[in-house]
Image 1 (cartoon, rainbow, N blue to C red):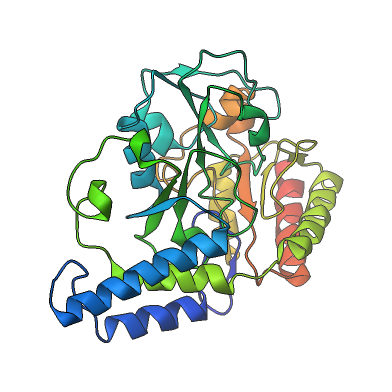
Image 2: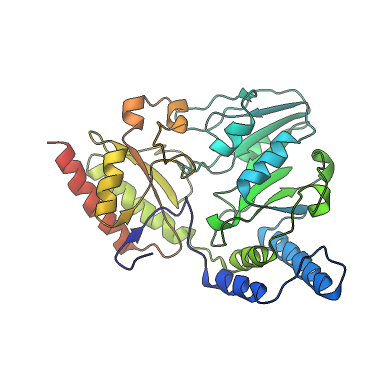
Length: 344
């Protein structure tokens, strides 16, 4: 990032931690295919399996860890190859979930985007995001652990920040917690839950494992500190400033991850806001980075009952470990000036 720019788009991706960079460089300096039978390959396999154990330990996970190219691939494996009688999800999920579940039932949500779970038939697989990538709303996944139901949790935004929920399958992505892009994992309690496809990763994901990225992922998880209490104070400061300037907080009263918040600036489109923030040297986003290239109206806000005009005035602000009170104040000064011009 340029020294004079303020980066507040950590929910899209967060910069690699120094420990992750060092681990990746070290692994690149000498590695072999972990599937090769020679001594170099066996050494690489030992590194790979050690990283797998370290990642599970850092996450407090006692099941299997299958490496993927990221959370999107982990989601696709889980939801297209699951041995479940029925897959059910919600309308506020990430596009990666909605793309592979086009024909499935969508559960209702309340005005804060919290999923409402009705009685469901045993054997159903419920796929729910732990933390919403646009609003930061934390879903009460403990309520979904009902007898006879299977739970898939998209933890791309929460892994490395919050404790993992109790779930049968979980998707994570390294670049959301200080690791490199292009690596993630499907955490799964019982491999019998999904159909194998052959190849590597115990036959569940074909392709040579990206060992340098995997080593960096492990290092990032182990280096991640508990910075959410600081983020909570910063977000409270930002919330108060936004409301004082006439803005609206999305899902204001719902439990939210302190690192993610969305705000509406009445009278100014999100597109115009992004341009003005960018010119001011501030990076924020409008919804998910996976779909923001088109700046389409947020399906998450639509499901929450927002009309298209209001939803089109919302931007997302997301913090990282290094975000400071000075950063929040700089953003607020710019936001307030823009809101004042928009209200004239």
